[in-house]
Amino acid sequence: MFTGIVESMGRVRGIKRGAQSFQIDIQAEAILDDVKLGDSIAVNGVCLTVNSYDSQHFTADVMPETMDKTTLKHLKSGEYVNLERALRVGDRLGGHIVQGHVDAVGIIGAKEKRDIAYVYTIKAPAPVLRYTVPKGSITVDGVSLTVIDVLPDSFTVSLIPHSADQTILGRKQAGDYVNLESDILGRYIEKLLQTGGDKETSSLSVSFLAENGFL
Image (cartoon, rainbow, N blue to C red; front, side, top):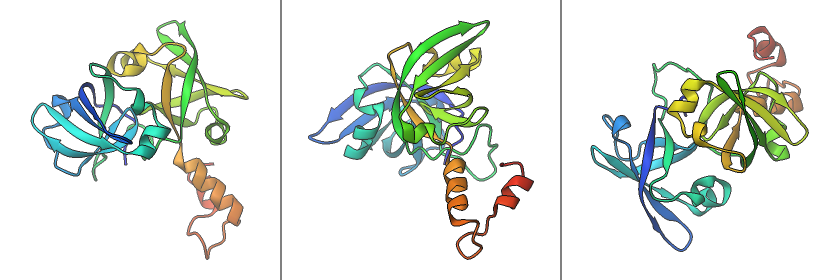
């Protein structure tokens, strides 16, 4: 599990492509001080497993399904990527709960400078927009962002200067693809409403969520 707070930008050192998958080698010395084999690291919002590392870089395998459903298949040597290590017990949850399971690929429809921030309009498929609400959270290339508005085929988010400088989103332009993960809480709420809050199927209830500020 992750938080959507990018720790560092890494750089792709190399890619070894196979018939249906590939291995990616990422320079990432800033986050490797406590890494272990089998650890999870989110790369542009995609949860990958470390299969080798040293003090400067790590490698991970990208499987066929991940290639099909994310932007990782477009990566090239020399490109920068957003990196976040998996959340540990006791860590602060600075963003929102992120699984690292990308729902779909979106495309930046527009990028507009507003004062010191950038506002992005991101075109997204219906399954993502279904769980996207104004002032709710969404993960874009591994970055936890607050939704400004939701349109019939897209949504808008604002990127503060810090996020623009410290993540790859600041380099993105109209026409670029991004990984999208909707807030998992929306899915749980939908499931709860579908079951009517049946105590036999869930320990949660609509009243509990409302009382605790989730609704």
